[in-house]
Image (cartoon, rainbow, N blue to C red; front, side, top):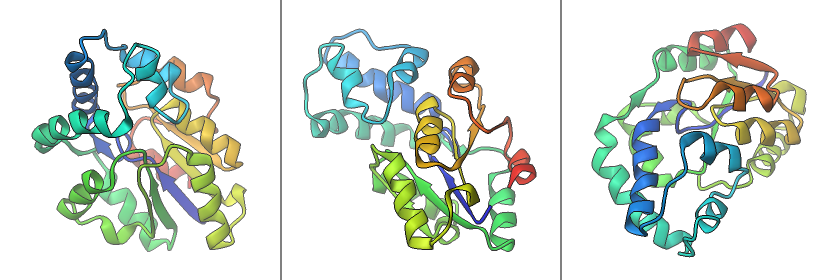
Length: 203
């Protein structure tokens, strides 16, 4: 593989509990019943707005973020890198593998962690607030003049796998334990990993 692209939340950053509580905060504010984690990721295809709309929340994306972001920030200190992330990233960098992040998360919420953990320089490509990950992957491939089969996208959500497959790249599902494995396996990833060290076996 010449390029390895990563999702951020729940893949590199171990923050799923904080993310889910931030999502539930939005539903609390609007007095609506939140989806379970399984329901959320079963429905998610890219644009999360539909999940809220289907449950009677018609607020704009900015309005949702105005609730989500302060709550997430208030608990961000609890987030950490998954075990082995730094070693794997440094090893891939030493192998001159091009790396990138493609995430739906807001830029400033990611940059603060990249700075904190001294990871920013490892990622040549950093794409934030991405709802169409397939297109983002394809743009990076075109920019680097790399064939899809020479790229792997790693994520923890079924939608990550589906977007990667639509882009024609290899896909790896990170089985973190937060999202039901059956949902990820149903998306038919090329590889599955339970810890970051296993990534070096497939790249």
